[in-house]
Length: 93
Ligand code: SF4
Ligand code: SF4
Image (cartoon, rainbow, N blue to C red; front, side):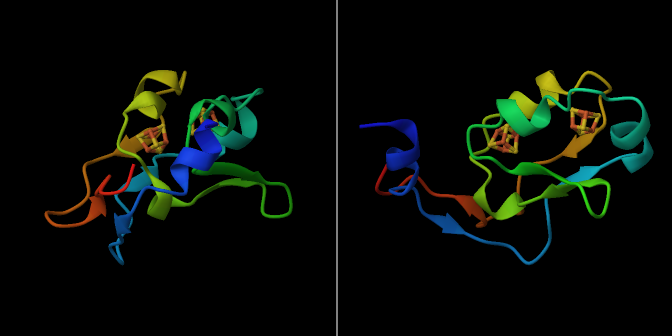
């Protein structure tokens, strides 16, 4: 089974508040040429919005693996665990 197929089995208790923030969107726009966050996240949480010229963050699908914290070359991702009771549950994964 491929990773994307397995991800369909993961369940979430989604918070209304995002547990992920971009510290400075100008760094994404002006300094980060290859935007690795859009490739390294297994859940495809980060996407470059070419119209808005910013990174969009689909925090709802975060698997809480921590990869983006290591992979952002500018330390520009403010990531915290979701509030208690929210986030990924792995029940069926
Ligand atoms: S890797 Fe970091 S600096 Fe680069 S686009 Fe993503 S969040 Fe912005
Ligand atoms: S913690 Fe993992 S799944 Fe969540 S946004 Fe970062 S890389 Fe993606």
